[in-house]
Image (tube, rainbow, N blue to C red):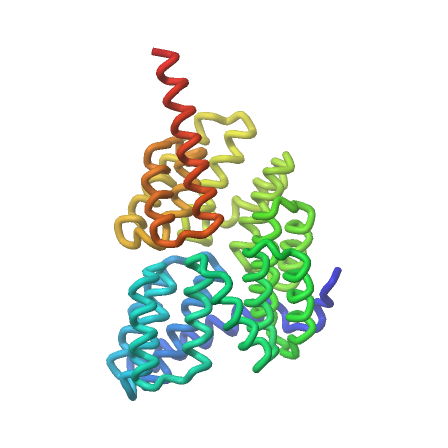
Length: 346
C-alpha cells in the first residue's frame, strides 16, 4: 500500500464524528444558529452527501446555505455562498456572475480564486484555471490545493504531471482525518478510469477502501472497474450494499449492468426502469447537475438513445470540455446505430 492507514483516524470513527457534528449543528439550528453555524453545517452536509452518496444531504445543505445567506454579515459573503451553490449544481453562468458580484463586494481573494478555478475547470477553460490552481498551490501548498491542481492536470491529459502532484498532495497532508485523503484518492481513481488505466484506478479505490470504508462513490466506481474486467461476483459484492445506503440512481444503474452481464435480463430491465424513473425525477429538479450521469445511463443499460442525445447536448452547451464532447459524439453514434438497426429490422 502507498498509504499507512495508521497515519489517520479510523475511517468509521471519522464518518461517525462527522454525523455527530452535523447533528449538533442541526440542534443548534433549531435554537437559533449563527451565520457561522449555518455555513459550517451546509459544508458538512455537502461533505457527508459526497461521502455517502446521499442526494438528500445535498438538498438539505442547499436549504441550510440559503438560511446562512439570510444571516450573512455582508453582501460579499452572501454572493459567495450563492455562487458556491450554483457551481455545485452546475449552473455555471449564474455562479460566474455571482462570483463577480462577490468580488465587487469585497469578498476574500483566496476564496474567490478557488471557486473561480473550479468554474473555469468545469467549463473547459483549462489554461485560465491552471494559472489560478498553480498560484493557489504555491501560496498554500496543502492537500486540497495540490490535489485540485493534480485533478486539473489529469483532465488536461498531463498525466505524468498529475501523478506527481497527487503524490505531493498526499505528502503535504499533515492532518489525521482520512476525509481529505479519501477524496483525493477518489479523484485520482476516477481520472485513472477516464484515462482507461483500470489497474491504476483499482489501486486507488483499494487504498481508499482501506482508509475510508464508508466512501460510497469509491465502492461504486470500484464495482465499475470490476465489471469492466469481467469480475462480476466482485462487482456485485461491491455495489449491492450501496443500494440501501445511497439514494443516487447511479448505483442502481451499475447494478443493472452487472445483472445484464450475468445474463439475468429480466432483473436487469427491472432495475434499469427503476433507475430511469429516479433519474427523471432528479432531472426535473436539477437538470444541469445530472445531465451527464443520466446521459451515460440512457446511452447504455437505460436504452433510450434519443434521451441520451438530448442530455449530452444540454451538457455540452453547459461546459465545452473534451469529456462532454466525447460523451455527445458517443451518444450521437449510438443513436445512429440503433436507428440503422431498427430501420433494417423494419
